[in-house]
Image 1 (cartoon, rainbow, N blue to C red):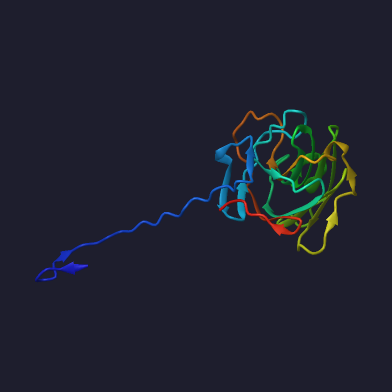
Image 2 (image 1 turned 60 degrees about the horizontal axis):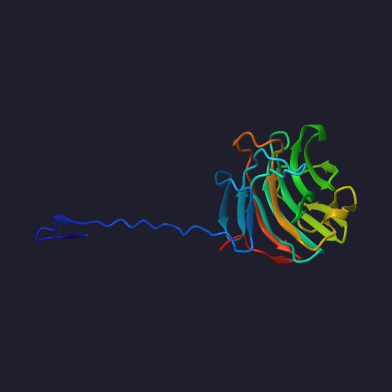
Length: 220
């Protein structure tokens, strides 16, 4: 704005608008939190960078597991995943684990794994003896929908590229250690191995997280 007899006095005002940070919902907990490796982008949008840390064995050192209580012993959980893993063992997807037994978990995830032939969609069923199943990721550059279904001790991992036509990875699997009421469900992202490095892998962005068909926000 200008003023004065000759319009020779000028004033200006700069307004900086700072967007409010999103806050994790009260029903969520982050196990093995490492703040430099995740970002809450919106109420329905979380990015996690895979790091070293393992789901095998009693340590469960995988970082930034986004977990919440399961709605019961039986449920269906889905998410949309944007993720293009580039190095060995980078993985991201859905997980269910027993609240009081880290040797009991089941995951369905997109990953890159040298011994599996590169880019795959896979499951890990830890009973605690770990069993891995996988199929080739035919559209690795596309977003993928993941589904984890649990009924009693039976678990199924599935995937879809259009959220309509679903492919089951191998078959229905069993895990008696997960046939309990106190379960945690949520997001998994990691590389495996001992957590000796803070290096980050390719980012994995999760959206459209649903439990039994109901959209569940990550934050507000």
